[in-house]
Every structure is written in C-alpha cells, then in structure tokens.
Image (cartoon, rainbow, N blue to C red; front, side, top):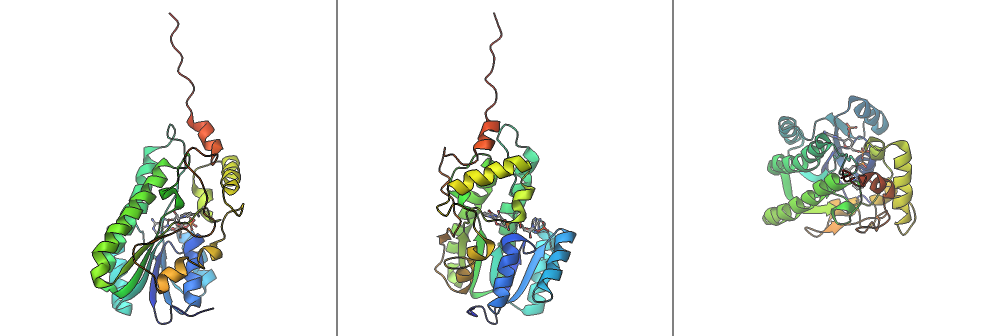
Length: 272
Ligand SMILES: NC(=O)c1ccc[n+]([C@@H]2O[C@H](COP(=O)([O-])OP(=O)(O)OC[C@H]3O[C@@H](n4cnc5c(N)ncnc54)[C@H](OP(=O)(O)O)[C@@H]3O)[C@@H](O)[C@H]2O)c1
C-alpha cells in the first residue's frame, strides 16, 4: 500500500458506512489522520468499533449549518488545518414521479446539495493551499434512470457546485473534483424506499447495463482513478467515473420495474 497521504488531515462526511467507511480505512492505511462524521447513533457506534481508534468518529448532521460550522471549527482547533475533504454524506430515495413524496425531494436536496455547499463554505478557513476536495456525486448526474428524478437532480446540482467552486478556489490552489460512481454495493439501497422485490429487479436491471455485469465493490471504487488518487494529487475540476459505472442511457432498460410503476393508468373518458 502506497502511503500517499502521510501526515495529511482528512475529513469524510458520512463516513460511518458504505463508500465513506471504506474510504476512511483506505485513507488511514495511506497514512492520513482521518475524521469521519455520521448522524445515526447506531452506525456511529458500529463505525467506532470497526475502526477501533484508527479514525476519529464524530456525530455531526451534514445538513445542519450550526453543526457543520462547529465541526470545522473543532477540526481547526485540534489540527490547525485540513488537507483532504471528502464530501460524501448523501441519501437516495427512489420512486416514480407520480408517487414520489415531496418530503423525499426536500430531504435529498437538504442533505445532498445544501450539505456539501455548507461544508465547503465552513471548511474554507482551514483548507490548506493545495488541499483536495472530492465530492461524491453519481453517474446519474449524466445518465437517465427511471425512479431517480429527484436524486439525479441533486447530484447534477452538486456537479455544478464542484465546477464553480473549482474555479473560485483555484487561486488558493485548492483542487475541487467530483467523483461519479456507478452502482456500488452499500447499505444505501436498503434505504431507498423500494421494496425488496423492486430492489432485486433494480439490481438486475442495472447490473445488466454494466460492462462487468455486476455492481462495483467499495474497495475498488477507491483505487485506480478513484478517490485515493483524487485525494493525493490531481488536476482541478475533473469528473471521475470509477469501476462499476452503468450505461443507464436515457430510455434504456434500467430500472424497468420502477418504470412500470411510473405509468399512470390511461385516463378513461366519461361515457357520453
Ligand atoms: N452506492 C452507490 O451505488 C452510489 C453510487 C453513486 C453515488 N453514491 C453516493 O455515495 C455517497 C455515499 O453513499 P453510500 O452508497 O456509501 O451509502 P450509505 O452506506 O448509506 O452511506 C451514507 C453515509 O452518509 C451518512 N449520512 C446520512 N445522512 C447524514 C446526515 N444528515 N449527516 C451526516 N451523515 C449522514 C450515513 O450515516 P448515518 O448512518 O448516520 O445515516 C452514512 O455514513 C452518497 O452521497 C451517495 O449518493 C452512491
């Protein structure tokens, strides 16, 4: 294992499960002092046990401005700087447009867009010259997938924030990049609001459109062109689409089970 992050201070939002947790382990192995955040007391506790002191695990709601501000102030007090910021906390709620609740739309925009924007804003005072900011968007910021209108819109908005922030922070030599994974096997799919049967159908549909015929693995998403390399050194404002990415082109077969739910029954004309 290369130790590309020796002596770096790295913070990962949403680092208690899934991609964030795998990244925390990898960053620590590469020599960084790592801080992860989460909100759910149960997953915070599990992460503390699993990371066993190698990584600092903090409770902080990524969508709450006061908590976000306090988080970066406390990192500043303890470490005096931040070299790597991985903005990863996010949620996904999938449903056909006709059934999608507005509350899910709002919750996703609150966390997936407002959260990283707030984090960038409050991290600024402690980001070092040459710091790496990596923002976890999704392949759906480019590819149409039925059932993901609201989720995909949050990830596309995030992609735009990355471009603008990269331009704005270039003068400070802070690199801001997006990573846009395809489907990666993580707990996020249990929280999408899809039934077990719909999840299975979704998995099969999506896997059928991935060249390797399967979901990506968390550890592989971090290697190669992935998050680790972005953290160590990279060009500004690039989007990386790592292993596991799906060709879920507009109108394709992906998530057919959701599309079936999407179509409302044909409206009947009242008989004359
Ligand atoms: N898995 C995929 O196929 C895939 C593909 C493309 C992009 N992504 C993106 O990758 C990121 C991570 O997803 P994942 O698949 O690893 O899902 P995950 O296992 O559900 O991880 C989500 C993480 O975000 C945290 N989180 C949720 N709400 C939070 C809040 N309000 N404040 C702080 N932390 C919060 C969770 O902690 P708690 O347990 O405390 O909620 C957890 O640590 C997301 O942004 C997702 O959109 C995932």
